[in-house]
Amino acid sequence: MKPPYEISSKILNLTASISEKIGEIKSANLFKPQTKLRKSNRIKTIQSSLAIEGNTLSIEQITDLLNNKRVLAPQKDILEVKNAIEVYSILEKFASLELSSLCKAHEILMNNLIDNPGKLRTSSVGIFKGNEITHLAPPGKMVHSLLNQLFDYLKNDPDLILIKSCVFHYEFEFIHPFLDGNGRMGRLWQTVILREYSPIFEFLPIETIIKERQNEYYNVLEKSDNNGNSTVFIEFMLEIIQDSLEELLKSPNTKITPIDRINNFKEIIGTQYFSRKDYLRANKRISSATASRDLRFAVEKGILEMEGEKRMAKYQFI
Image (cartoon, rainbow, N blue to C red; front, top):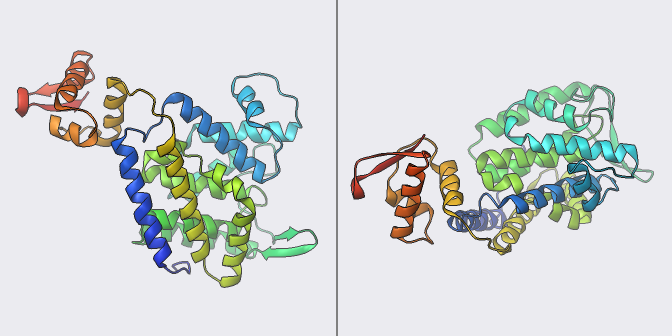
């Protein structure tokens, strides 16, 4: 069954804007940021997603943990960060359409933090704000079937994956399938879904902007609950994605080397044969002569094999 939501004009405008920005990022060869920026964004992502849940570690402390330095902080907070570092470092191993993969991610994320991490809840649970209950999750006996329906929607519905990733995020929080860790898992899994859609999203600090708008994040979750559909949450998350892409476009333009262009193009073309014209289409800011030099360099280094000569030449990654 399809989750309830409407495709508003705001959603249409945001998806169009996001698609346009993705195109700009690809043209600027920013879709896989430089190593330093990737590491910085990953640290911000982990710090922000866990801070939303009350973790106290700073960006500097998480950086120290990544560099195997000693950190003075509550052991629970340190363990949460170490688990998050592990799970975000293997994002490519998770399959967005598989429930078993999601449970494995939860097992890593919540390892030694709760009993039976990775296991779906079977008991009832409610979310409280102070003494007031703000969300009563579906009964435990319904969790497995509701998640199966949600994954069926993700696999088979014809709507744009940008929209479906937001719907999944909301519905996951509504179902609240685990006893703990649902907030960080919902944000993580939207990243897993989006990463399969485009590699741009692997290192995009979406959680950082959610943290900056944390109150609004919880308000739109609650409003969607009250409305009985996720439309306002979809609009909110698409705004977050748009802002994250805008930040990436504004990031300092480090010098792109020939090997950067070659490696970035490999992620686009895979093992298909391609021409110099194809390479130029993906690297619109370079000249034909630069494209020829890049390709010649890659052939000499054994990265590419070439068939034919001059304009008729075809290339393939080895």
